[in-house]
Length: 277
Ligand SMILES: [Zn+2]
Image (cartoon, rainbow, N blue to C red):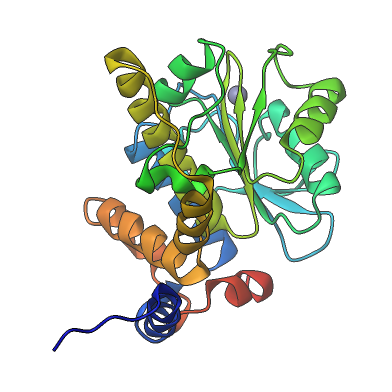
């Protein structure tokens, strides 16, 4: 029997099956943010103490952030800081990274954004020194098709308001941005999405550097790239991808008990992020 259907039917069928089968644990916002730190640490995003991860907390105008002085993989649900919209600490010991100030500018400019991750992984950092934007020309990196901005000039150490203004304006309506001579940033509607984009932008930069050393990068068809972008960014797909990296990280983590899910597994990560602490 020869079966031929319109591709849209397969997209619909896949979405329905993901809805049913892609169930993920329910972690609290603190657990998910700390888990993202450990995942990115394991994935090679550390650069000493550089980089910051944050997420909106339950009360408007408050945010969870990593404590400055800890490495990414040292993040725990109980050592995150709760800060206000001027980086004053409301809960927890220590100080936030002063560069978290540019996160606040992005949160103010993009009310739908609930998590921001900024890191300096090696391939992103190398690409950021060449002076070219990210080229999303591979199926696995279609997440960034028309969705990665480019800040071509380095504004210097980003602890002031001017850098916050520059970065928040440069990212515009995109989810990600490549920052010249600096690193990457993902500003997303969920912690899971920000973490997955951070993992994949490093992969995209690595592939781009390899491709540039081998020849000229051939652009992909924009219509197909848009289709792949939307497919990869389905909430269920992002949730399942985050869960895969979480399992990979926690398998070797002595603190695995800190990441015991707070409720039964569900496929709906976004609703959970909106409601639980
Ligand atoms: Zn940085």
